[in-house]
Length: 334
Length: 156
Image (cartoon, rainbow over all chains, first blue to last red):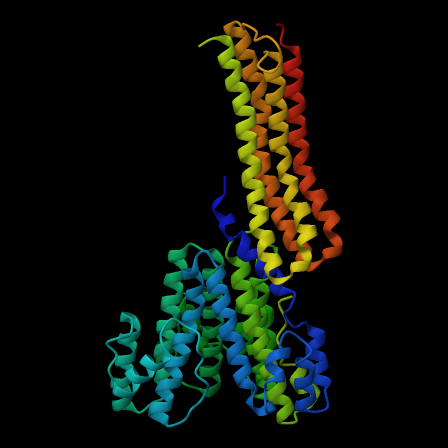
């Protein structure tokens, strides 16, 4: 008798109530149609973000609300989950994000992104470790990657290595943690993300006319499409790549995304479709009555919501046409 | 063991196992409802209704136990001296509601807890959530019916 999953009963009940407060498509449409960034922010202020928006002095500082919201969401779900270690797997991605930001700030002198106070490692300690080039306090795998990055950068001066090495550690850890947890949904999500990242790498390498060795280096292991099959596709024209993927789940999104990429020269459509694909996959959390799946689905839903708010506000601040914003908006979870 | 003692085991199982089923079922719904009410206190009344549904198995078990007690005279004027086969007959008559009460109570709790999620999203659809949970009830009622027919058929 599967009794064990009912330990999530409280957390799932609470998540169901939280889901009703996620922003729906109509809200985003109204934000997109608003006449200015300030107006869009006002529309946002009519939702669950009312308090945060009321305290925001200037629309240009909207990132602070988003970071606070993300942190609040993770803190809450961590607190109510009877198995917080499963939620920590999701938070791991932010440790890596923060490391990337810190490394780029150190080596390139640019603050590429905000540090996000979600994740298991303390930001101060990480900052200190990166600045002093002393990674003893980091978990073993991260430490290895960090040391490799600082060695490699001294020799090659190639900032791409930061993203590359840290992504590899990240997905390694995610896959192992997900397998350990026995939660199929988590493993499925990460495998799909790896596949999509690898397909994007393939197309990027192909478009830039780079060689097979480089592609081999940047492909992530553990995907459902073997890496040698992906490197094999490098010599085929892009059209046959789409034919080869017909049998897989990714056929539609790759063919549409790639067509758009070739036409417009940006991968933004493919990025959107990839996110939508993961959202559709995680939506099973909405129908799962017990277990961690609804919590994971909610976390992802919140991440997508935050991404959407950022897309709209950045678009509004830069006065992009509504249509350009609309086509980048991700599908919502609810 | 005397026949009376064996019959009492039957009464204890009917009340005990069906009661455990209800306790687990009501417990699951209660947790789920508490989660919802934390965020939305107005849903208390609706979720209370859902929480009560898996409670019936315990009542059915008590009813069966009560009939056994009455038939053998634990309640009433004079305690009957049952033969061992008579005692076993009472024990076996108690089995349907004891086992089905235990299992259906838990599963009804799971359905009701899912209905809490339904009420969170669509409070107006409470009725449908209740109907799903009541479908599980059918089998507890059938088991109770079997137990009662068996009990009344035992020659004393």
